[in-house]
Structure formats: structure tokens, C-alpha cells
Length: 466
Ligand SMILES: NC(=O)c1ccc[n+]([C@@H]2O[C@H](COP(=O)([O-])OP(=O)(O)OC[C@H]3O[C@@H](n4cnc5c(N)ncnc54)[C@H](OP(=O)(O)O)[C@@H]3O)[C@@H](O)[C@H]2O)c1
Image (cartoon, rainbow, N blue to C red; front, side, top):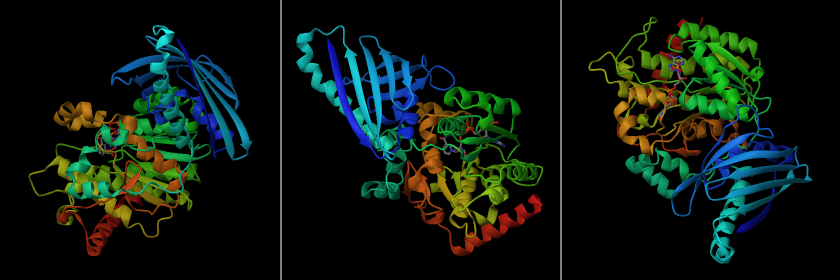
């Protein structure tokens, strides 16, 4: 049996944006609800001959794999792909037409060959396939259209936040999968984005997506070999050239070195559009750095503050800073009487959560900063960091954890989405929406507490930065 599905949409986006988004067919995982995962198998930019692996959700609840090959690319006019699965094949054609400089019509045609199904059964399967096609094209329209403002938190979610546990259930992959928008369709060509911790986990995923969107990336890590390997992964994923990637090597828990590197970066890049303070870690043991600072506090709190300050000469009024914290901060307050965790027994999870709480608090009180500061937590994602620092949690929860791309989603969105431009600074974001940041009584802080924290951190940083 052969079934042809045809749909068309009109979107308020220039044709170049629409074509660039769809040229890499792997973005289908961001807009087609029937696609669980899509991966470009061929390294480099999407070209004729590029291959993709798609994992499709079947109506039965099971999944199946299809291999797609890009068989034609007619710049800003047409994309053609052939897909082969176990029991069927498909020929997908996307045609693009500019209706005016800001509006594009996209015509989508899928010719499905279900060789095993005799034609008399068409009446049964046709409506189902048509519905799948309609869902896909509606998803594409949603992915390309830019909302006027970020989605607000619904009443049910606000209640869930207050009760902590129901909200925490969404920290796993379920939360990401139920998110209404998953697309990253805003180009970042010409943007300069600095990101820490791009060698693994969430930072690597975010860097891959940002490079695919066309940004120039400043990759800040602590190991030259791992940075080089990350640059190769980013190039293979996105097709960007090596000129778009700039490597800086520094251990972020060594604050003096970090200050020197940051000054070099700022001197080399008079304009930085986004700084993503992603690097972070949870340490089981208390350790003091050679500068006399507890390691978790140095890496998770002071390094992001220092980088933000040292790179600020390169910020414009449209620059954004994205600070990555953790849902663990819901359980901890500032602990101003023992910021360096001198009182035993040391608890690594608490030290980490307190440092993240401190970073959020400083982000909320960033008067005088040029850039807009947004703080996000990624939920629970399976990354090398989680496997190392929380092995039992990682093992028990593995099936429910997000993958790195899911955990990095809000990071990339905060860095690039136009609808974030007028969003208030200093909020806590999770899955592209602003969430409550303190629920338990001992986790809120007074103006006096915040001033104390600011004075303490400024005193330390002023000694290390100059
Ligand atoms: N994954 C989660 O579920 C989760 C949940 C809540 C919050 N977070 C936060 O999300 C961020 C990313 O976490 P992840 O899970 O992706 O962690 P990850 O897999 O361990 O990756 C962390 C990245 O930070 C870098 N890094 C660590 N210490 C550094 C240092 N001293 N100097 C320079 N770079 C350093 C690592 O570099 P190397 O490759 O050299 O080690 C790596 O690139 C962190 O801030 C973390 O706290 C993650």
C-alpha cells in the first residue's frame, strides 16, 4: 500500500530561517511528536548524502528505527529525504516559498510505502497516518513561530512547586517531554557565546546546539585534550568550522588564573552576547583550594561571579548571562554563618546546594550589571558528572533521567530565544518557565543576608582579580 500525506503551513518567519532550521533533518526531534530521537549520523554540515537515524514512536507504544538519507537540497526551495524502516519506507519532500520577506509557506509531502499492508486495509490505516502527518506539521508551525513572551507557570504547576515533591517528579525526562515547545529555531549567526564546562554533559550538548544555530563559541574548560575533543564533537554535530570555536584553558576553581583568562577573553572579544556559567561539580570531600576557599564554593559560586564581572566590559545592554544552578537549592538556605563549610561533618550535597543557592541569590541582586542575568536548573540529567558524584542515584533513576540535550534545553533557550529579551532578570527558570525559588522557611533570605553575601564575595573577588 502507498499512502501520500500532504500538508502546508504559513509561518511568520523569513524563508532563510525556515530553511536553515529544517536543513538539518535531526531537528525533527524538536517538532514532530512521533519522533522520540533523531541523530545526524554523518559528521559535518547537512549535505546531499547525509544520513540520519530516527527513533519513531509507534501507535502501539513501541518504537522503531528509520534511516533517512538526504537526497536533494535546493537552497531555500526544497529538501528531499528518503527513509527506510523495517516494514516501510518514505519519501519526504519539503517545499519552501517566500510570501513576503517575513512570511514563508512550507509544503510538506510524505509518500509512505507500507509494503506489507494489502490495499484493502487502507481505510483502517489512512486516518491514523493522516493524524500523524497533521500533528507533525502543527508541531513544525509551533517550532518556527516565535511567541510574544515566555509561557507562564500554570496554576497546577505553581501548586506543585509549593509542595516540592510533585514538582520534583518533572525533574526527570517526563517534565521535558511534556513541555509544549522544544524547538531552537532562532539563528544565532554573528553572536559570540562564552560557555564554561563544554567538554561533557549539559555544557557539551548546549555548545553543540548553539553552534548548529550559527553562534561563535568561546569554550572555557580545564583540560586542553578534552577541549579539543569537545571542539571536534561540536563540529561533527553542527557542521561549524574550526574558526567558530575558540578554546580557553583554565581550572575555574583557581580563581586568580580564571581572572587572568577572563581578562584575556574580554580583551580579545569586545562584544560577548551571552555568557553561560555551566561548569559545576559536587564534591564528596571538603577540600580547600590553594587560594584558601572551599572547593565547591569556589567552582559553583565564586567562579561564575568572577567571570561575569571580568567579562562585563564586553557586555552590551542586550547581553545575557545564564547561570546554571540545581534543584537541590530548594533544600538549602544561604548558611551565611559558615559559607566555607568549616563546621563538621562536611556534606557534599549540602555544600553544593548552598553554593548554588548563593549563586541564585547574587543573580537576583545584580543591580548595576549591564547584562540580563537568568538562572536555570536543568532537572535531573544523566551526565558524567551525575554518574561520578551520585552513582547510586544515577543507577536507581537511570530510566527516568533526562539525556544531556533535555537538561541543556532551557540553557540554550535562555541564550537565544527572542521572547526572553524582555523577561525579568534574576528569575529561576526550569523547562522554559519561571518557577518559585524558595519554598522551605529557612531557604529565603533577607535584604541584610543578601548584603552580607555580596560584601563577602566582593571582598574575596577584589583580592583575587587585581
Ligand atoms: N546533570 C544534572 O542532573 C544536573 C542537575 C542539577 C544541576 N546540574 C548542573 O549543571 C551543570 C553541568 O553539569 P553536568 O551534569 O553536565 O556535569 P558534568 O557532566 O560533570 O560536566 C561538567 C563540566 O564542567 C567542567 N568542570 C568541572 N570542574 C571544572 C573546573 N574546576 N574547571 C573547569 N571546568 C570544570 C567539566 O570539565 P571536565 O570535562 O574537565 O571534567 C565539564 O565540562 C553543573 O553546574 C551542575 O551543577 C546538573
